Length: 303
Ligand code: GLU
Image 1 (tube, protein in one colour):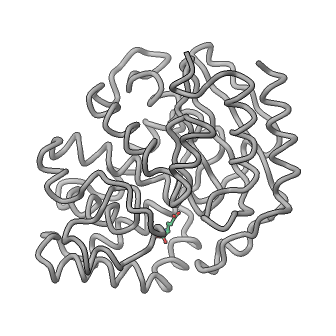
Image 2 (cartoon, rainbow, N blue to C red):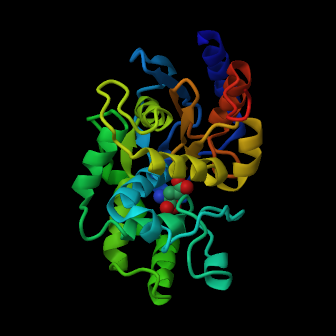
């Protein structure tokens, strides 16, 4: 098993040269394109780490998984999915097109429109601090904090996300205040995590929502199934279909370069490589996961 992860790490390192760091959020442009690391955590509690497994980077879109878990817990399945659908959009993560022309509800909670709407459901009951505590608990990492520089950068330049929130408000889909919603969303995207923290989140999901070391239920099992299904179909931007065929592990990526994977075992795999491919996924992390999944038979449909 260690060999498969080491080979995946080497393949991932080599593939970093094929990507480019995100620069539409100015602060992200400062990331080192050659950085690469991964962490695997299973119920033994002994993580397997390679490279930059402890480098902090912003969680970005991976917070959408945490936002969905919180909304399901607070509002339940029916109310949550009366605000957002669960269909792959086939469009870019920040697209506004179908939201305006095809449907009032965002296609799914893993694209920006869906995550912003889902975040609005957390207000007014949950504050950013509540969500920070929740993220720390789900990632098994009490040291997660807010990266203020990324937050400011994103809040100052997030015009498209503002447009999405105001469009949702104008359609009467969003009840909460759009500015308060955006503030919460931008802060949650700016949480500083590591590949190790993402491995923790992946393990909790893969372990049916149960804390792997103290047996406490952190996410209800029926919600874990919903979250993992949506990760599987919508988690990797408009590469989600091909990724599911080639890797077959419920995963979610973010433009900060992270990927969280909830794998059989149960195993959580967290990867970090800020050089992104054309879809916005870490080029190194995708290549690493193709190898690791094939080498270890992790595809959910391989028996
Ligand atoms: N904060 C980013 C945005 O809203 C998240 C995008 C992503 O990671 O896909 O544009």
